[in-house]
Length: 130
Image (cartoon, rainbow, N blue to C red; front, side, top):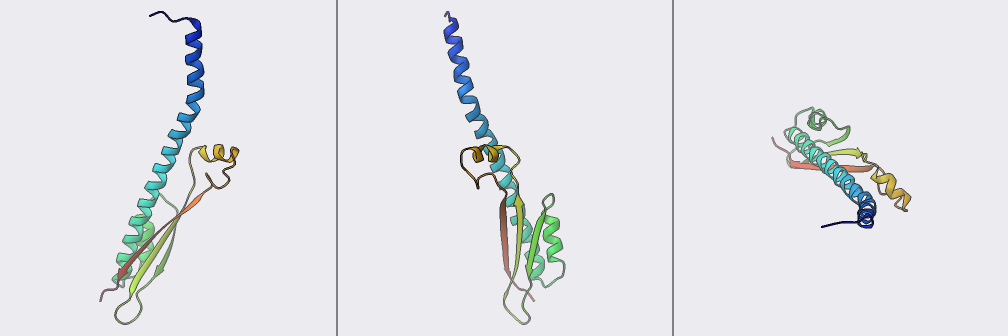
């Protein structure tokens, strides 16, 4: 099948129109995946920390920070109350910064909050033992 110069030009225009949309989509997928990975990591860190706190051992915050390797996290520990019963609580927070320029692109179109850093949080609660 023979194509003339007009068809080749139309193909170039179609690629030029669709490529930015596809790139923004791929960048959004990358950022979403990294944010999901960070959320899973801090959830696991909260579980690890609250497990130590529920056994009334020291070092729950250190254990949670160690479990969130590669992330800068803030840890809040509410230890077991004296006496019987009660729950130990560990909250882990992380500020996630987008790695792709998709946030800057959204700012050009009026999306002020999209693309700015978001705070991820995970909370672990476990009944106190012993």
